Amino acid sequence: MLSTDFIAECADRSPLDFESHGLVSLWEIMRYQGWRIVAVVEFLRELKDLSTFRINSGLRDSLVSIADLNDLVWGRFNWCRDECRFLELTDTCDRLNNQTLVKMRDGITYAELQTEAMVLRDSITNQLRKRSFAFVPADKAKFQYELEKNWGTIWGKFRKAENDIKEGVECYCLERNTAAVFHFMRVAEHGMNKPRGVARDRVLGFYRSLVADLQAFRVEYRNHVMHTRTSYDDLQAARVMRHVHDFMERLASRK
Image (cartoon, rainbow, N blue to C red; front, side):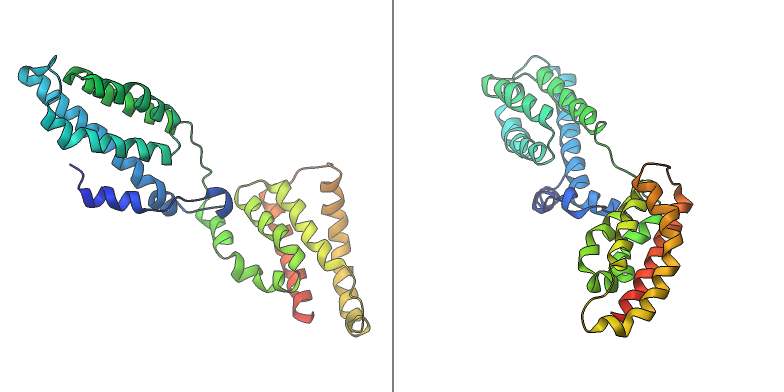
């Protein structure tokens, strides 16, 4: 049986905003949502086992006793409903609100309670099968986790490039390779804006050598991706990322 401390710990976990966090680790998913699912499913298993035990004791069509209702059912069902709402398991919430809790208020037999436990568990399982998560291999995930370490100095000097840097790395991790090339070429565009003002003459020679180095690369990649002429594979996307990173890093060191 689940301890009250475990249930309280699950309830205290803050929701994880996947959209604002971008890529997240499997541990983060388990920490913020996985244990809540485990707790709910385990409660329904306990409920089914209790009902089965009472049915085997000859109480199949008997109403669930006040003792069982107070000990296991009422408070835990309300908690289960709150957890399903948190997890956005809407079908299960609807079943709980419109059928399970109504039956419990009107009087529910052990056979009906057993059925409700099984139906609710199946409902959760069916909804979870429709939740999709992208798997990122460890050798690619490291680019996401080392994002600030590798690119922080660059976007510190080229603030407008920060969003495309993050999008480019995330697209590469998710194997959206052509999209990654698109974003990295946009990053390079920020670097190719020629310096202005007093510092212009001082860095122009250095800058020209870098731009000359990138121009052929730009024709090969940027012009094609902008005009939908081709798609890119993993190795090409990785090459673009490295080249743009080195180009921008050299620029940032002199800005």
